[in-house]
Image (cartoon, rainbow, N blue to C red; front, side, top):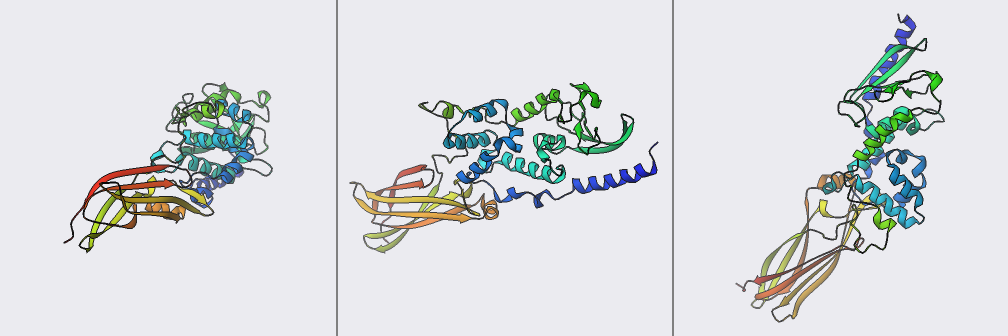
Length: 371
């Protein structure tokens, strides 16, 4: 029978749990400002400085850890990080690496809810499970007799199994088995019951037998298995595979032309070039996202004589929130070329000044006679 003191403590813990479950994650997540831009060298360098002593280590496969430890140059390590996140980008079309955002969101939540003074949250049993498996679908808290002492035991349930080694709704059980305030993962169906502290190291918050489940979950997170680190390990490959989220070599655009008669043999071609915001490669510049394009438009006649041409630089700067609102919209860039009635060749070249990606269009057009 649970004493009245324990009952009061139990009610208090339930209240704390309710607060934990409904804590606004967005208020602690700093990733909201890091949307779909290509990671800057500064950002990658910041991640690399603490890669093996931070939550990044939790989501690596053993093979990736081995590769990163072998790399010597900063350039190779930067490429590794870009490939690492790209392999886990399950929806590249959005221009947002949802996996990376979710990772930071989980790490922030674990830091607030599972860390203790002098202890990194990601090194705790609940912190590691939360970061790798994600939030549980159901949480229960019970008082149980463990080793002759009534203790609070926490049960996490996942409706969709995060690993082949865990059955759906098989509980993951956490308890303060040493009375130090540190919660340990107690059991799993494939490890068997090993609850006694006599067989448990204080440093082993998650049993080694449980590691295959965590490794399996990390492997499932890799959606682009064809994207490998071969071009870093073998830089002499003649045709290295593309590495998203580096910008595509093609910059999709649409165009239309309107004609304004100025004189008998003089017509203004008002050219509109249309880009979808989602198709542009956005780079972080301070607290803004930026695109830099060079646009060249050229109009030639049937003999190849240049009638008119223009070259302009287009710079777009948006906040992450603005880009989120406009991601499905189009940006219209307009330029005026002077021509004359008859058949012409229109050439449009769009170049990304940062990545070097180029798109080119050549199309025959007929400028109507003046009215």
